[in-house]
Length: 106
Image (cartoon, rainbow, N blue to C red; front, side, top):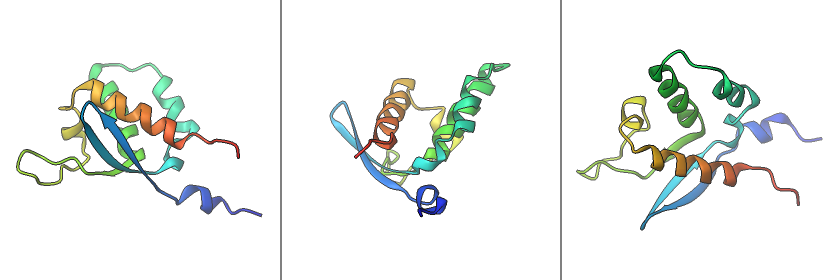
């Protein structure tokens, strides 16, 4: 019988192509839980709450990437960094992540 840990401890590497760049990510598929999805559907009191929810979800699922700052230093995946990103970029990354971690039979 399979153990739950087999499904909850694994990570996956994926590449996301956006415009003419490829972003390499390490994601934790098991972080995308029903609890996390349900939280995204709950009403929020403010824009700040919405930003916190979105960035929290992102940070739980995307655990590493190869994005750097202008000096070539690795850019940490933090709330302060994520809220500076263009929304289209985060949405594109999350759409590709969701496609990559969705269970496929066979």
